[in-house]
Image (cartoon, rainbow, N blue to C red; front, side, top):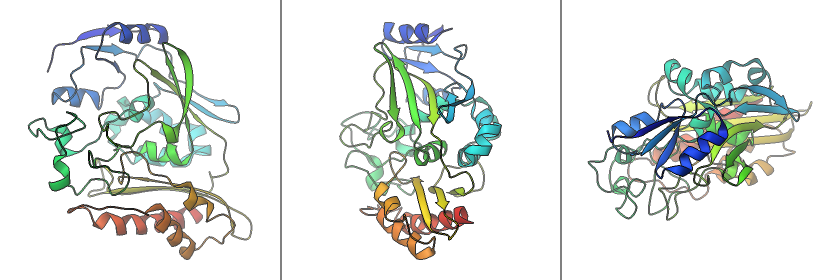
Amino acid sequence: MKAFTYTRAETEQEAIAAIVKMPQSVYLGGGTNLIDLMKMAVALPSQLVDINPVPLNTIEEHDGGLRIGAMVRNSDAANHPLVRQHYPILAQAILAGASPQLRNMATMGGNLMQRTRCYYFYDPTYKECNKRTPGSGCAAKDGINRIHAILGASEQCIATHPSDMCVALAALQAVVHVRGQRGERTIPFADFHRLPGNTPQIDTNLQPGELITAIDLPANNFAARSYYLKTRDRNSYAFALVSVAALLDLDSSGKIRDVRMALGGVAHKPWRIPEAERQMAGKNASEDVYRRAAAVLLQGAKPYSGNAFKVELARKSIVRALTKAAA
């Protein structure tokens, strides 16, 4: 592990100033992903800025919805009464991820910053990884790619985003609050993470030094009919092969008033196609409608040698998740 400087920040301003002062610095929250990356010499920060003392750990009602501080632990968010009552799909998604010990440490802001679990990215003995070393190639394309992307990938990278929580936040149309040298700004969740394109080493649209301060969840009518489905190789502590966040609002006759869907395990970021949701509006909640929506969500899917099964798995998972949500 490379030697680094440790700085403890008490306020947002102190944290941002410390990051700006020393290049290649990173924020330290729970450290559940960062420390692993440092041990593997994938992340080589010159300074860790500990933000645990910064007061960003509250959950409160805000503008009819909910505001969750970036330093709230995943377990606390999943078990909070307001989350469980109004945004149960977020609780489901968080509890589907990691292990209890990790959820007790991991923070909401840190969860957004998770990096891919691609085998080639995590192991520096493999030299071909554009995400780790831009311009070196992508070993996964012709290698072991069972867990890799079928949507939104590029010739530069076919890695997937690992978070369960982020799939639920994408469906809920969350908004991320950040603060940097130039002040505060908000980022719609759909714009927070990036597809790989020609710059797979850049995971998010955060500017250098920006600190995530909170996540806003807007009010919705989905609490009664929401479901998070995670398909994985084993029932605990495994990343999703395919996951689906499904949210439905039905009228008294069973017609769809509103719907949201997001997929995990299939792309470089949580995958949403609003057109798939728009074409469901006003129709009866039925398997046929769900199948047509799945076809739109999966348009352009490009499997690789080891993950062609994901296309049909995703199709069936979408139908099952919507069926569960409707029930």
